[in-house]
Image (cartoon, rainbow, N blue to C red; front, side, top):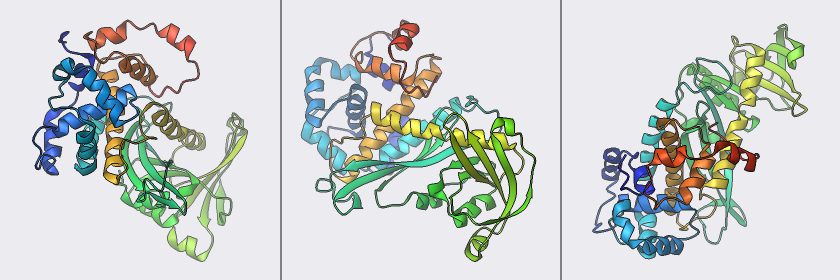
Length: 388
């Protein structure tokens, strides 16, 4: 690797520039643009994410302070607060959404054989949403409540590598269950859902698409037990039943049979009642799959703590979505670097190191190889590590 390049430039070399140009051309991103290109915009926003900049002025001051190094970092246009604000406001956020999907596809290939704790041949996904509160007077388009604004990040997480496969950004009033209609269902895959997604019409569509689901049942579920299967109570299983939904509308929405599993989670002292259309996997495996749903909660906590998605550099819908998609791009990029360089560091540790070394000219592999892993583990035992 070229030791004459800054760390930031070496990191950006992992981005596929040809695919980025295709995304820009698809949405005419360079229409009437003379100097500050979409690539310059991406690099400036990537720098802001990696170094935790607080505002557009903060970005401008930091980059202008290193004016002699900008060319070697790949930034050709003049960095100005107004120019960056205008770019975030008017350049189509779908450029960065499509580019993030390119990186996601690459990351999923790298992590295809990653172990997530359960040995299965199926692809396994967790689907959930998180809410980011906003000031309604500054973000009037982000409707949530009468006096409160918010947006929601609806995320389909591939549990092999914890890669966000699909991300939908909506205003806060959109209910999570409606986004099930936007999923491109993968036959044979297993989708893990919380009880907020109980909609038997939509679940039956998943079943008809030859996909499986594991979902937590609501307390008011009415059903008729057809027969019970034997369970190993030493593992926490209490019942494993084949049921038929009872009631006119429920039976009409989901006419097929379901499997109902009641499981006691000793770690959390909590009883779970699960529904699934998979009649082959052992009951304990179904329960363990649902427990893996917690990884998407960790993902949401992680990105809120370590990426810039709770405070925004612009107030327009386009600026907010642009910032979110570039943040996801950086998350996936660092995951790709970790895999391709075969590093044992957590994603948190990598981002912390990058945040203070972007201007240095050390080779990336050397930068991460000199880290004392044991000392880091002793200092931050409570950090969320998605890539152990």
